[in-house]
Length: 294
Image 1 (tube, rainbow, N blue to C red):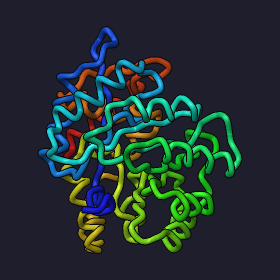
Image 2: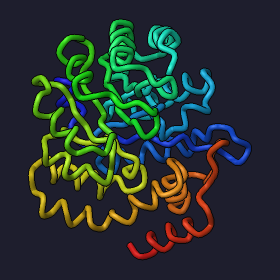
Image 3: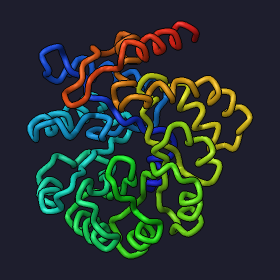
């Protein structure tokens, strides 16, 4: 099965639950993983930015990878996030991280440095050459400060054999359509914006790597499958219900929103690591009200 087939549908950018003392709560993480798998999501992503990777130590990252593989136990594919703004360090990580059971590596474009498009190209080329697994680009300029231009993504797709796809989270529908029109056959393109996933799939994307699917895996993965089947009227009915949830998830910061939902659902404790903090009381009250109305 091709990677495009393996990762078609809904991937979940897993949160990293913490206990009150700041340690990783592995029991809670197991509950979240079971929740998303049993409710129909197609794959999981560990060490994505939703997992608060900037505030995790190297040892914690290694343990999270191994624990995720252990709990998933080959039931669904696992994608591992290996991103950062120091290319040389990432090359070393790709050589030493336990990636043997990973379907692919997801790597956000370098943040803060603001490299040129040539710099982004050379960064990903180095990662692809070092990676034992296919590499997925991740374009999220709202977080990184520098977007991957469609021309750069297409150059990587056509010229670098181990570049297998892209998670596109620019929010720019025209950019996405340009990318989809010119991408090579078999190149995976998934949405990184829950609130745009339905129209982006209608334009030709293969699915989504989702935040909302942590807490609403059944509804959101059904929405994605309906969209992939071009049953858009039915997909819209599910999307309409989730519109308010999308806003609540991202109105202050991610993953504060999704952690508030998961805490109210009894799956995790509502703790984040600084500089992130939990949702304000006012927004958290809206989360409770939304859940009560479902």
